[in-house]
Length: 288
Image (cartoon, rainbow, N blue to C red; front, side, top):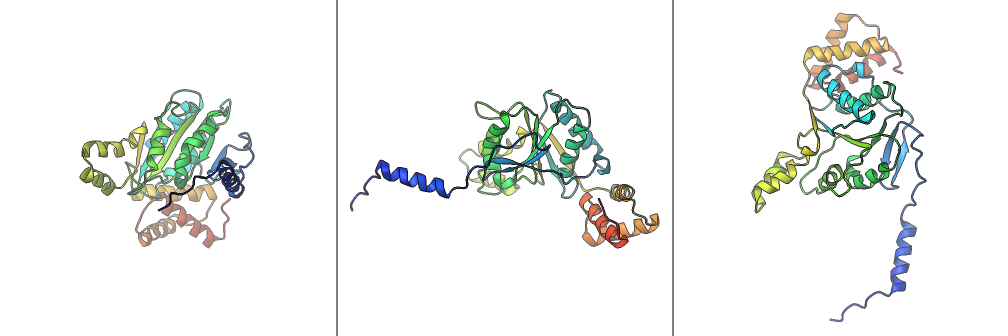
């Protein structure tokens, strides 16, 4: 069998130039003053401004008062230049985890800061580019809450290592002007069978499991979100009705709201909002 000929320097140069031509061109640098919120485009390696954030007022988030107070205090301290912790918001679906992050960002910016706090969202599928994003944000003159919604890792997914390194590890560590908030349905960000599989197959089970669980230890604040009570669910709905001026008899509102929850098999902030959308449509009222 004949050994392959090594590529010449000219061949390598031509290959590199061809790859450069087919790769997407980098976008122009983002003006951090363009907006208070951005989305990270991992392909173009740039931030896209979000003119209007999809969020609700913090006063409309019911049944999570303790979590609201803790996250607000942590975020305000950070925005004013004081030490603060990364936060993991975990628990039941539809209970306002991502809504709280976006509402807190708006609420803190209303407290009279010298410079507005920026919110940057990174998608779960782009988490491996987190170190690149953090280096991009390291040089900006604003404080930034970096936000990843619905963060979790499945069996065989090693991208969690990029998250660990970006949050605490490495020589540089997390930039002083960046805080990381994540939401997840899983307390340790990984399914139990992934952790159990590591325990059963590793030479040293304890060390393998420790590496997986240590990811959530990078978050100094853990906030649990649990299914809401009937009273909290009705409170959410009444708050929306007042906010948007929906005219309906209180007794009818209660009966219809409870029926809506039963047909969906859940009581949550998301269920309450879906009921309000349906009710506003029936009443011919625009929500704006």
